[in-house]
Length: 176
Image 1 (cartoon, rainbow, N blue to C red):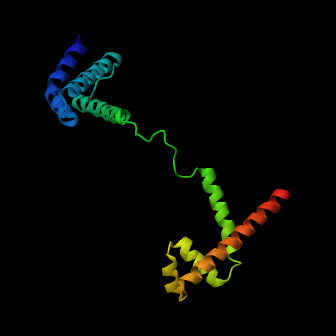
Image 2 (cartoon, rainbow, N blue to C red):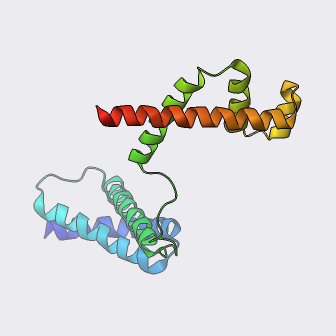
Image 3 (cartoon, rainbow, N blue to C red):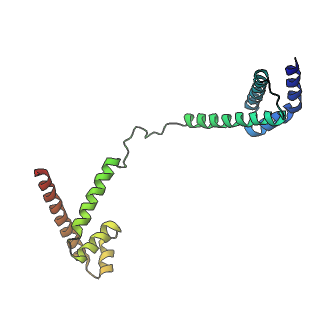
């Protein structure tokens, strides 16, 4: 009977402040009332199960309320994520390369770099400005003091040599 009287005393002392606290934090009456009931349900269970007294009932009640609010916020966020519409292109194939594809591209780029080192300095510079810096052939010509036609010719020949070397290396590796 003493527990019942103590519970009623704690409830009377904290109810208005707790309800105001919960209503401000949830911005919704039904949710605040649900949390309010849950806080006092947990307080009642604690008082029935434990022989130890609650030394600071107000602090204890608000600690429960903060935990319940945290749980409420987590559930609300989870619910919002679950309710988000599925994007229209959800089933679409990603245009970004997979990890395996990226590794192959990086490996291939390493081979191209190695082969590019064999090229004359001017060819390397033209190739790097065109593919690495995305400069136009006209811009490259102006920067290097050569004609646009020379830039086109050097790009074409450098690409041809690199392709030929790559394919010959692949043929050699395939035969081994």
